[in-house]
Image 1: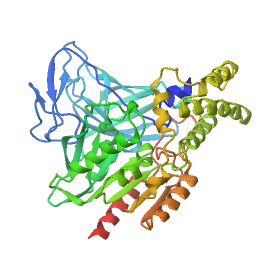
Image 2: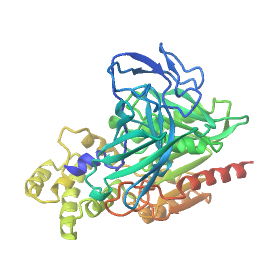
Image 3: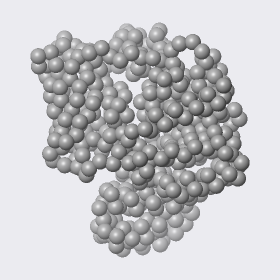
Length: 489
């Protein structure tokens, strides 16, 4: 059942998140917002942060000795480099005197303000964990001659033994200046309430803006925090939001179709038009993977969108994309031979057809009995019969995006990784460009990032601890928006 567990929706997405721990003394603080003026302020009562205007969130102070960081000299902004035998990772820690007071940042990993858990401090030593979907990384460190020195160790079995531990030294320094403010915002799409964060550049003037649409699966607003920080620091406002059913947003994406999700994004666009710091003539959308794939639906339903950025968007049929994705999973993750892959794909096609049509259960059950003992079966095992994915795929698996791309008349950036293992790059580019020609749209740009995979990370060596960013991704997005702005004015 590995495929179902690691690719819980038909379109793969990797979501690494960390969560804080609870305790027994309530205080309130601003959510991680990137504003140094309010990140460390604590409040005794609920309300709104007077600086960034985001709703305060409840937080628990730990009464037990030895589990907070206050009074041990750890507080502050620390920067440094972690090293394995052949890799380096630049990262920083923001440490505050609360149990949820450690935030991890790394431009190398596109990570920003990832909250630590299981924080323990005693005398001059400190430990904490960062927990993702597939592994946990444990940090152990101590104050040595005014620096934080220590090591981090991962539980990821895909990392080679010699790379599972990295040593680091961090120096205390001033945090980088924050060039934007963050405002908590909300809007509605029918009965669904959406909640998000608007990153607004500091200074006068009206700024171009994007609404950051979601990839597949669960998505919180902070999943887009790194890109929001990158663009807002350079004069482009960004609205990120919790996907329906996640975070503070109501509804449930598992029972929603793509028109529903498109409507959620359109509500964000309409909200931006009411913000006086935003240029209403330069509001665009950004979407990665599923978010880019449904971008033409959004554009076709909403007048006044100035530009469209579709990253890793596929334009083949959902079935073709799934077969492409699963084939690569069997090659790259399961390391199966071609004969085993062919057998696994034949079985996968059977349950994919059931998911698309809702018929053929008897054939699937017979095929399952024959396949259950195969070494490839755990990678393509279908989800339980009562799982939500069967109903969801009846909608998602029969979508035709061609008719929507043929209605896109605005400037469009198509950006892909050269070695995307989830989206068929050449076939998708060919189909979208064909559809845009039918729409008489000659304002599209295609950028392919060299040596990059689906999430715009570099192809590294097998057994590496870190999968780092491929260079040029955010730069290409920023430069293209800047070009669109110069054409507008």
